[in-house]
Length: 245
Image 1 (tube, one colour):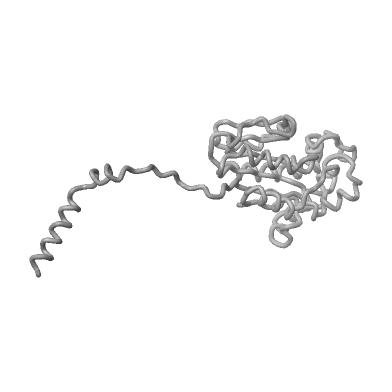
Image 2: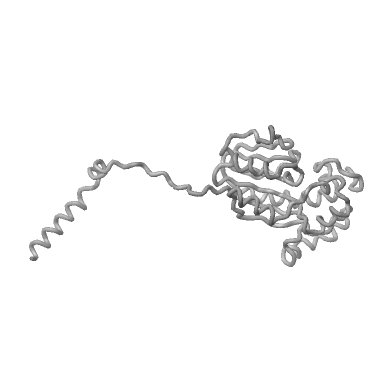
């Protein structure tokens, strides 16, 4: 197992350290809980293929991409073809996060689900990134603030419907110190919820102006198909009214 004091050369390598494993266990728990309630036909996880964040999904076709496999910054999927897309720590390690989100919007179906995980710059983990001088993973990433990410998603027509923070303990390098700070998870959710080391966002692609397509009925045919009883009842009522006068 790599030592966290040795600079990790990839995010996957860092997740194998005690520090990374602490974060990974919380991320796996969130993805397991969230994807199990999302339905559809096609689900894709981009990045971190060694960790199956789709393992509890009931969607029949599930794909894990080995890194961000973009073809000239384009995702190799058809427009409006995916029901669920996971981006675990993709945006902060990309030079073109806006383009990735535009591609996500293109390939997701209307009402399709997007789940993002990212490191929170407004946390002890974000502060540690400055102390580490942005060397190695995950500190070399460009941590994206939650408010900023929400603005990007809103511009693309996404509605944020869920999410949470996690990893409230300081970014200690040793397991024993991280375990001693386990109480900070429940306390963090209650007292300083926005200061977790990582955040998750669950957003849905909304398409303005969507409406049900109704058939163009033939009025003549519809009148012939109407039941005769109501018509006879109307005639009887008219006759009763005339007789009463």
